[in-house]
Amino acid sequence: MKKISLSDGEWKLMNLLWDSEPRTIGEMVTALKHDTGWTKATINIMLTRLAEKEAVRIETGGRAKLFYPIVKRDEAVVQEAKDTLGKIRPSGLGLLVSTMTKESKLSDSEIDELLAILKEAKERD
Image 1 (cartoon, rainbow, N blue to C red):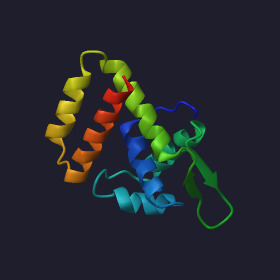
Image 2: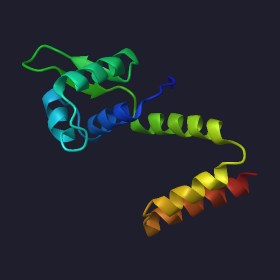
Image 3: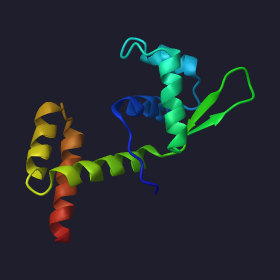
C-alpha cells in the first residue's frame, strides 16, 4: 500500500467517491453545497491534488470528466489510524479510545466489535 496523507477536505471528496463512483465535479459540488459551500474551481483544485497523490483517477472523453478513487477506503483509514497512533503514543491511546466512545454515539454492534477487537489483542499478547 502506498502511503497517502489526506487533508480533511480531501477526505470529504474521497468519501463521496467511495460511496458512489464515478462522479463528476458537478455532482460533487451539489453533494457538498450545504456542508462546505465549495465552488467548482475549489473542488477541481482538490481533485487535481488527489490525482497527483495517485488517490484519484481522472477519465476524460465524455461531456464531463469522471473521477474514480484509486486508493481503497480501508487502506486510507488504516494509514490515518497509523499516523494518529504515531502522534499520540504511548500515553494517549486510552484517552483516544475513551474520547471516541464518549463523543460518538456507538451502536451496540459497534461496541461489540470494539470489545471483540480488544479481546483479540489481549489474547495475542
